Image (tube, rainbow, N blue to C red; front, side, top):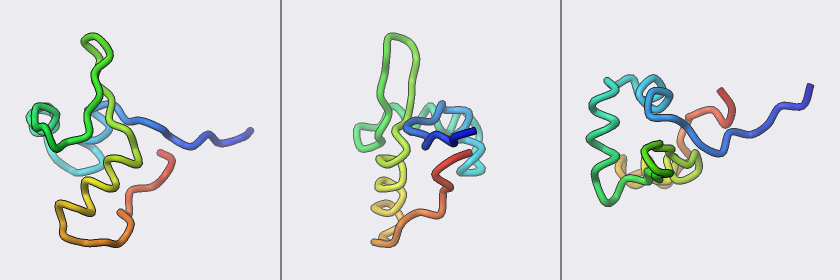
Length: 70
């Protein structure tokens, strides 16, 4: 079976990856600098944009350690 690279995460997946609660992720999604995308009522977070946001927030230029596939 061919593994597909994850393009987006759901808020619950981001909460698990970051080890924070789901309400924390929803609050992040309300911030203008957080890379959340809305499709109607659905929210997704692009994987590459999340990695870049984490690197910027941590002040680190290195790639995030979030796995490319979950």
